[in-house]
Image (tube, rainbow, N blue to C red; front, side):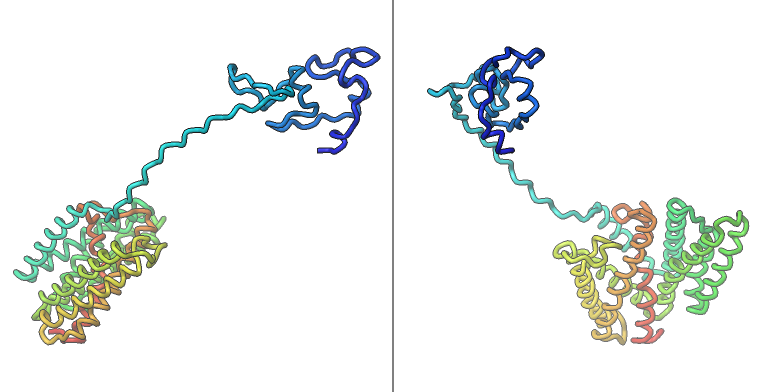
Length: 376
């Protein structure tokens, strides 16, 4: 604010009529002033709650004040000098305290009851077929492979427009599992090569647009699902094959259970937030601990010729490959923009959502058991 506006002496006609009479066209409200002074004076800014220059005179002449009464019946009281006295305001009642929000309980993100029920049912079918007739279990593997291929190719077509041919993949995948059981690794490799060739030829019956990405996805699917599953059938060929397969299944499940239990309870540090935000380093520690303890017990009591220290190594390898397999499928699902590969298994998602950690673990367990106790 300019200091001259507060210190200038009053001009003639400022507080009352000038000698020349009232100026025509002057504003009816507020004090009158002559034309000469109007060119030299500047209006002062009105600050809310502070009287303008002139003090009480503005009130006496009916000028509006921003700090005036807020309600029609709220009239100001004046003091002895004519200045309005402030009426003491009653304190505003403090708002009622809001109750603190209840702490949210951790959720597993799935229907835990349905997941347990489905898991127990699948386990019963697998154990029954595993220890009754080996060929029946080979059929279970082949069915799981075909369903997994159907889920994977369906999601690829829905989300990316990639049409990996399902028919040669399904036929070749089932043949791959049977060949691995009958002819071992040599039969599995031959079946894999023939399946890839069938994918390339089958896709030639359609227009050439997208041929490269379709056959590439088809070869990837053939390796990812049936070829890796073939090592489970190869484990079964040993004399103690059912116990080897049971060890493989138990350690993978124990690793996943340890990761879930420890990660859900103590997990704070993310393991791979860009791939799977739910996985933590604490969960990985739980997977390794549970799997190593389980491996020592399985090698000591289930596998003939095995020792507990070999079980520790096997458990550590299972925890690593199971975690990598889970992250690998999470990478695929994140690229596709989906949460689950299917809805066939309530509480679990699809078949591929259960095979994600099993598939890459199968060749590692097969190899380590062959090194530790032989092919049997």
